[in-house]
Amino acid sequence: MINTITPALFAKYPTAEALAQADPVEVEPLIFKSGFYRNKAKALVGMARALVERHGGRVPETMESLVALPGVARKTANVVLGCALGTPAGVIVDTHVTRLSQRLGMTTEEDPVKIEQDLMRLLPREQWTPFANRLIWHGRRVCIAKQPLCEQCGLAPLCPSAQMPGTAAAKPKAKAKPTAKAPAKPKAKAPAKAKAKPATKATR
Ligand code: SF4
Image (cartoon, rainbow, N blue to C red; front, side, top):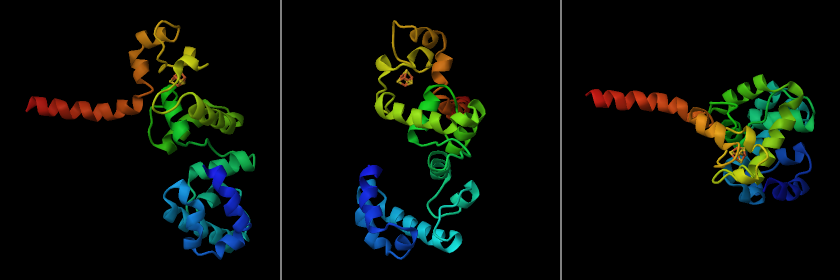
């Protein structure tokens, strides 16, 4: 979706200076399809103005400077640093990386910043960006949110969440329903609280 939107956006506003002078209302129709377009239009224009005012219209090259821009958090900053500049400062954690790293048992966290910290500990620095990009592609094509295509997945033999009865992946699953819960471990936290409440009610 973003790739279909940006050509017209960049054609109309080819530089940070051009976008900085725009009225967010003019930007809205160009990004309408991406959702939350009003907030995004304000953020884009605010970001462009900050680029012009603080950085001479150039994209800064540090995490600290990037996340100080309107509308920019670690995910976007990691894309810029890792994909555009080749100087990764962390792991891109979007919806796909969140879901797949949980399903693969690489994290039990739900907060993107904590997931990123887990992945940074597990992966060598040179893999921070390529690994995230692989997970994103895998999440779009195979390990989709509603119904992962485990039977077509090359990671199934390694994945604690694989749903393939009768295959090698079923063994770890059978023996490791705890591990199978591991991908859902983010729920393992919630369950911890959830358990506590029911226990209290039951006692009463
Ligand atoms: S085996 Fe299934 S749950 Fe695991 S990564 Fe592949 S598609 Fe996702």
